Image 1 (tube, rainbow, N blue to C red):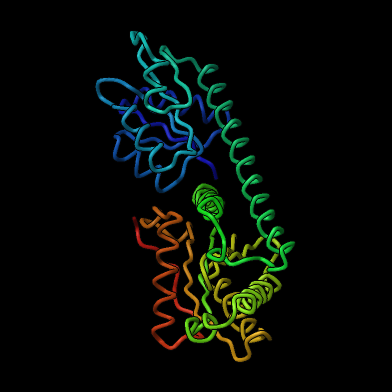
Image 2: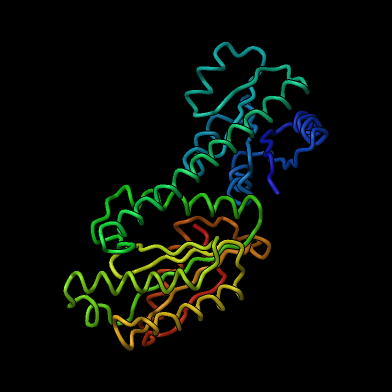
Length: 317
Protein backbone atom coordinates (compact mmCIF):
# COMPACT_ATOMS: atom_id res chain seq x y z
CA UNK A 1 0.00 0.00 0.00
CA UNK A 2 1.28 3.49 -0.90
CA UNK A 3 1.16 6.07 1.87
CA UNK A 4 1.13 9.84 2.00
CA UNK A 5 3.04 11.21 4.98
CA UNK A 6 1.75 14.40 6.59
CA UNK A 7 4.51 16.02 8.68
CA UNK A 8 2.82 18.63 10.88
CA UNK A 9 3.09 19.32 14.64
CA UNK A 10 -0.42 20.76 15.02
CA UNK A 11 -2.99 18.03 15.58
CA UNK A 12 -5.73 20.29 14.22
CA UNK A 13 -3.93 21.07 10.96
CA UNK A 14 -2.68 17.49 10.55
CA UNK A 15 -6.20 16.20 11.15
CA UNK A 16 -7.65 18.51 8.51
CA UNK A 17 -5.04 17.49 5.95
CA UNK A 18 -5.62 13.85 6.76
CA UNK A 19 -9.37 14.21 6.22
CA UNK A 20 -8.82 16.01 2.92
CA UNK A 21 -6.67 13.21 1.58
CA UNK A 22 -8.48 10.21 3.05
CA UNK A 23 -11.80 11.46 1.66
CA UNK A 24 -10.07 11.50 -1.73
CA UNK A 25 -8.98 7.87 -1.36
CA UNK A 26 -5.39 8.32 -0.11
CA UNK A 27 -3.80 6.30 2.69
CA UNK A 28 -2.34 8.77 5.20
CA UNK A 29 0.06 8.57 8.11
CA UNK A 30 0.95 11.54 10.34
CA UNK A 31 4.18 12.54 12.06
CA UNK A 32 4.42 15.38 14.56
CA UNK A 33 8.21 15.83 14.59
CA UNK A 34 11.04 15.91 12.10
CA UNK A 35 12.76 12.83 13.52
CA UNK A 36 9.48 10.91 13.65
CA UNK A 37 8.81 11.89 10.04
CA UNK A 38 12.23 10.62 8.96
CA UNK A 39 11.58 7.32 10.70
CA UNK A 40 8.26 7.00 8.85
CA UNK A 41 9.99 7.75 5.55
CA UNK A 42 12.55 5.02 6.18
CA UNK A 43 9.95 2.53 7.35
CA UNK A 44 7.13 3.10 4.87
CA UNK A 45 8.79 4.72 1.83
CA UNK A 46 5.73 6.97 1.35
CA UNK A 47 4.56 7.91 -2.11
CA UNK A 48 4.67 11.59 -1.10
CA UNK A 49 5.55 13.79 1.87
CA UNK A 50 3.60 16.90 2.89
CA UNK A 51 5.67 18.97 5.32
CA UNK A 52 4.75 22.22 7.03
CA UNK A 53 7.17 25.11 7.34
CA UNK A 54 6.52 27.23 10.43
CA UNK A 55 8.05 28.20 13.76
CA UNK A 56 7.27 24.82 15.25
CA UNK A 57 8.34 22.65 12.34
CA UNK A 58 11.28 22.87 9.96
CA UNK A 59 9.78 21.22 6.90
CA UNK A 60 12.61 22.50 4.70
CA UNK A 61 15.20 20.64 6.79
CA UNK A 62 13.04 17.52 6.60
CA UNK A 63 12.81 17.91 2.84
CA UNK A 64 16.60 18.13 2.48
CA UNK A 65 17.05 15.00 4.56
CA UNK A 66 14.40 13.10 2.58
CA UNK A 67 16.06 14.11 -0.68
CA UNK A 68 19.41 12.93 0.63
CA UNK A 69 18.13 9.52 1.72
CA UNK A 70 15.33 8.90 -0.81
CA UNK A 71 15.56 11.43 -3.65
CA UNK A 72 12.73 9.86 -5.66
CA UNK A 73 10.09 10.61 -3.00
CA UNK A 74 8.33 13.87 -3.91
CA UNK A 75 7.95 16.52 -1.21
CA UNK A 76 5.22 19.18 -1.01
CA UNK A 77 6.04 22.04 1.38
CA UNK A 78 3.24 23.97 3.09
CA UNK A 79 3.91 27.62 3.97
CA UNK A 80 2.05 30.17 6.09
CA UNK A 81 0.08 32.92 4.29
CA UNK A 82 2.63 35.60 5.24
CA UNK A 83 5.53 33.85 3.50
CA UNK A 84 6.79 36.12 0.69
CA UNK A 85 9.06 33.75 -1.27
CA UNK A 86 7.61 30.24 -1.00
CA UNK A 87 8.66 29.12 -4.50
CA UNK A 88 12.29 30.13 -4.06
CA UNK A 89 12.53 28.63 -0.58
CA UNK A 90 10.90 25.34 -1.56
CA UNK A 91 13.09 25.03 -4.65
CA UNK A 92 16.18 25.70 -2.53
CA UNK A 93 15.13 22.90 -0.17
CA UNK A 94 14.68 20.50 -3.09
CA UNK A 95 10.88 20.20 -2.92
CA UNK A 96 8.84 19.41 -6.02
CA UNK A 97 6.15 21.98 -5.17
CA UNK A 98 4.73 24.20 -2.46
CA UNK A 99 1.38 25.51 -1.28
CA UNK A 100 0.66 28.67 0.68
CA UNK A 101 -2.13 28.83 3.26
CA UNK A 102 -4.94 29.01 3.89
CA UNK A 103 -5.10 25.45 2.57
CA UNK A 104 -8.26 24.39 0.78
CA UNK A 105 -9.31 20.80 0.24
CA UNK A 106 -9.51 20.96 -3.57
CA UNK A 107 -6.08 22.59 -3.85
CA UNK A 108 -4.37 20.11 -1.54
CA UNK A 109 -5.96 17.04 -3.11
CA UNK A 110 -5.31 18.10 -6.70
CA UNK A 111 -1.68 19.02 -5.99
CA UNK A 112 -1.02 15.74 -4.20
CA UNK A 113 -2.64 13.73 -6.98
CA UNK A 114 -0.64 15.50 -9.68
CA UNK A 115 2.65 15.00 -7.84
CA UNK A 116 1.91 11.30 -7.37
CA UNK A 117 1.13 10.89 -11.06
CA UNK A 118 4.35 12.68 -11.96
CA UNK A 119 6.36 10.51 -9.57
CA UNK A 120 4.88 7.29 -10.98
CA UNK A 121 5.59 8.41 -14.53
CA UNK A 122 9.20 9.26 -13.70
CA UNK A 123 9.69 5.96 -11.92
CA UNK A 124 8.22 3.97 -14.79
CA UNK A 125 10.41 5.76 -17.34
CA UNK A 126 13.52 5.26 -15.22
CA UNK A 127 12.87 1.54 -14.72
CA UNK A 128 12.21 0.96 -18.41
CA UNK A 129 15.32 2.92 -19.38
CA UNK A 130 17.44 0.97 -16.91
CA UNK A 131 16.11 -2.40 -18.06
CA UNK A 132 16.69 -1.43 -21.69
CA UNK A 133 20.26 -0.43 -20.90
CA UNK A 134 20.83 -3.76 -19.18
CA UNK A 135 19.48 -5.64 -22.18
CA UNK A 136 21.59 -3.57 -24.57
CA UNK A 137 24.79 -4.31 -22.67
CA UNK A 138 24.04 -8.02 -22.55
CA UNK A 139 23.20 -8.00 -26.27
CA UNK A 140 26.44 -6.19 -27.06
CA UNK A 141 28.37 -8.90 -25.23
CA UNK A 142 26.58 -11.60 -27.22
CA UNK A 143 27.24 -9.83 -30.53
CA UNK A 144 30.92 -9.64 -29.66
CA UNK A 145 30.95 -13.40 -29.18
CA UNK A 146 31.54 -13.29 -25.45
CA UNK A 147 28.00 -13.87 -24.23
CA UNK A 148 26.75 -11.82 -21.26
CA UNK A 149 30.07 -10.44 -20.14
CA UNK A 150 31.40 -10.31 -16.57
CA UNK A 151 31.11 -6.81 -15.17
CA UNK A 152 34.82 -6.48 -14.48
CA UNK A 153 35.81 -7.72 -17.93
CA UNK A 154 35.29 -4.39 -19.65
CA UNK A 155 32.43 -2.71 -17.82
CA UNK A 156 32.38 0.96 -16.93
CA UNK A 157 31.16 2.87 -13.91
CA UNK A 158 27.96 3.55 -15.89
CA UNK A 159 27.28 -0.20 -16.19
CA UNK A 160 27.34 -0.62 -12.44
CA UNK A 161 25.37 2.57 -11.91
CA UNK A 162 22.36 1.58 -14.00
CA UNK A 163 22.30 -1.84 -12.35
CA UNK A 164 22.32 -0.24 -8.91
CA UNK A 165 19.55 2.13 -9.98
CA UNK A 166 17.32 -0.76 -11.02
CA UNK A 167 17.90 -2.68 -7.80
CA UNK A 168 17.53 0.47 -5.67
CA UNK A 169 14.11 1.11 -7.19
CA UNK A 170 13.01 -2.45 -6.47
CA UNK A 171 14.02 -2.08 -2.82
CA UNK A 172 11.99 1.12 -2.64
CA UNK A 173 9.00 -0.58 -4.21
CA UNK A 174 9.18 -3.48 -1.77
CA UNK A 175 9.06 -1.07 1.17
CA UNK A 176 6.22 0.92 -0.33
CA UNK A 177 4.04 -1.96 -1.45
CA UNK A 178 5.11 -4.37 1.30
CA UNK A 179 6.28 -7.36 -0.70
CA UNK A 180 9.36 -9.51 0.03
CA UNK A 181 12.53 -9.42 -2.03
CA UNK A 182 15.67 -11.53 -1.99
CA UNK A 183 19.25 -10.98 -3.13
CA UNK A 184 21.75 -13.72 -3.78
CA UNK A 185 25.47 -13.17 -4.32
CA UNK A 186 27.08 -16.15 -6.04
CA UNK A 187 30.76 -16.81 -6.69
CA UNK A 188 32.39 -19.99 -8.05
CA UNK A 189 34.47 -21.71 -5.38
CA UNK A 190 38.27 -21.42 -5.51
CA UNK A 191 37.95 -18.88 -8.29
CA UNK A 192 41.60 -17.80 -8.08
CA UNK A 193 42.76 -21.41 -8.48
CA UNK A 194 40.16 -22.85 -10.87
CA UNK A 195 39.06 -20.03 -13.19
CA UNK A 196 41.47 -17.10 -12.92
CA UNK A 197 44.45 -19.02 -14.46
CA UNK A 198 42.44 -19.96 -17.58
CA UNK A 199 43.02 -18.05 -20.84
CA UNK A 200 40.79 -15.00 -21.06
CA UNK A 201 38.54 -16.41 -23.78
CA UNK A 202 38.07 -19.72 -21.94
CA UNK A 203 37.41 -17.97 -18.63
CA UNK A 204 34.84 -15.68 -20.24
CA UNK A 205 33.14 -18.65 -21.88
CA UNK A 206 32.96 -20.49 -18.55
CA UNK A 207 31.46 -17.49 -16.75
CA UNK A 208 28.98 -16.96 -19.57
CA UNK A 209 27.89 -20.59 -19.19
CA UNK A 210 27.46 -20.08 -15.45
CA UNK A 211 25.21 -17.09 -16.14
CA UNK A 212 23.24 -19.06 -18.73
CA UNK A 213 22.68 -21.92 -16.28
CA UNK A 214 21.49 -19.47 -13.64
CA UNK A 215 19.14 -17.65 -16.00
CA UNK A 216 17.57 -20.88 -17.23
CA UNK A 217 16.67 -21.80 -13.65
CA UNK A 218 14.88 -18.51 -12.87
CA UNK A 219 11.47 -16.99 -13.51
CA UNK A 220 10.96 -14.27 -16.12
CA UNK A 221 10.68 -11.60 -13.41
CA UNK A 222 13.97 -12.63 -11.76
CA UNK A 223 17.28 -11.03 -12.72
CA UNK A 224 20.73 -12.64 -12.82
CA UNK A 225 23.62 -10.39 -13.86
CA UNK A 226 27.42 -10.30 -13.56
CA UNK A 227 28.38 -7.94 -10.74
CA UNK A 228 32.17 -8.29 -10.58
CA UNK A 229 34.83 -10.63 -11.94
CA UNK A 230 33.49 -14.10 -11.19
CA UNK A 231 30.61 -12.85 -9.05
CA UNK A 232 26.91 -12.69 -9.89
CA UNK A 233 23.86 -10.99 -8.40
CA UNK A 234 20.56 -12.84 -8.50
CA UNK A 235 17.56 -10.66 -7.65
CA UNK A 236 14.28 -12.36 -6.71
CA UNK A 237 11.25 -10.04 -6.33
CA UNK A 238 8.15 -11.23 -4.49
CA UNK A 239 10.21 -13.98 -2.88
CA UNK A 240 10.15 -14.70 0.88
CA UNK A 241 12.94 -16.43 2.75
CA UNK A 242 11.72 -20.01 2.30
CA UNK A 243 11.21 -19.55 -1.44
CA UNK A 244 14.62 -17.91 -1.81
CA UNK A 245 16.27 -20.93 -0.18
CA UNK A 246 14.59 -23.23 -2.68
CA UNK A 247 15.80 -21.11 -5.60
CA UNK A 248 19.31 -20.83 -4.16
CA UNK A 249 19.57 -24.61 -3.82
CA UNK A 250 18.41 -25.04 -7.41
CA UNK A 251 21.05 -22.59 -8.60
CA UNK A 252 23.73 -24.35 -6.54
CA UNK A 253 22.98 -27.56 -8.38
CA UNK A 254 22.93 -25.81 -11.76
CA UNK A 255 26.46 -24.51 -11.27
CA UNK A 256 27.64 -28.12 -10.96
CA UNK A 257 26.31 -28.75 -14.47
CA UNK A 258 28.69 -26.25 -16.10
CA UNK A 259 30.51 -28.22 -18.80
CA UNK A 260 33.34 -25.74 -19.36
CA UNK A 261 34.74 -26.45 -15.87
CA UNK A 262 33.84 -29.97 -14.65
CA UNK A 263 33.29 -30.24 -10.91
CA UNK A 264 32.64 -26.52 -10.45
CA UNK A 265 30.80 -25.52 -7.27
CA UNK A 266 29.74 -22.16 -5.87
CA UNK A 267 29.37 -20.28 -2.60
CA UNK A 268 26.21 -18.25 -2.06
CA UNK A 269 25.25 -15.40 0.24
CA UNK A 270 21.52 -14.79 0.67
CA UNK A 271 19.80 -11.65 1.96
CA UNK A 272 16.00 -11.43 2.25
CA UNK A 273 13.76 -8.52 3.21
CA UNK A 274 10.20 -9.28 4.29
CA UNK A 275 8.38 -6.00 5.11
CA UNK A 276 5.47 -7.76 6.83
CA UNK A 277 7.88 -9.36 9.31
CA UNK A 278 10.39 -6.52 9.58
CA UNK A 279 8.70 -4.55 12.40
CA UNK A 280 11.40 -2.20 13.67
CA UNK A 281 13.96 -3.27 11.05
CA UNK A 282 12.23 -1.74 8.03
CA UNK A 283 15.03 0.74 7.27
CA UNK A 284 16.30 -1.54 4.55
CA UNK A 285 18.27 -0.24 1.58
CA UNK A 286 20.06 -1.61 -1.44
CA UNK A 287 23.34 -1.08 0.39
CA UNK A 288 22.28 -2.94 3.52
CA UNK A 289 20.94 -5.87 1.51
CA UNK A 290 24.14 -6.16 -0.50
CA UNK A 291 26.25 -5.84 2.63
CA UNK A 292 24.31 -8.66 4.29
CA UNK A 293 24.56 -10.84 1.18
CA UNK A 294 28.30 -10.14 0.91
CA UNK A 295 28.93 -11.08 4.52
CA UNK A 296 26.88 -14.27 4.06
CA UNK A 297 28.92 -15.11 0.95
CA UNK A 298 32.16 -14.78 2.92
CA UNK A 299 30.78 -17.09 5.62
CA UNK A 300 29.88 -19.64 2.96
CA UNK A 301 33.40 -19.49 1.51
CA UNK A 302 35.00 -19.72 4.96
CA UNK A 303 32.96 -22.86 5.65
CA UNK A 304 34.38 -24.60 2.59
CA UNK A 305 32.00 -23.45 -0.14
CA UNK A 306 29.33 -25.32 -2.08
CA UNK A 307 26.76 -24.03 0.40
CA UNK A 308 24.22 -21.28 1.07
CA UNK A 309 24.52 -18.85 3.96
CA UNK A 310 22.30 -15.95 4.98
CA UNK A 311 18.85 -15.14 6.28
CA UNK A 312 15.98 -12.73 6.52
CA UNK A 313 17.37 -10.40 9.17
CA UNK A 314 18.81 -7.26 7.59
CA UNK A 315 20.84 -4.80 9.69
CA UNK A 316 19.48 -1.28 10.03
CA UNK A 317 21.72 1.33 8.42
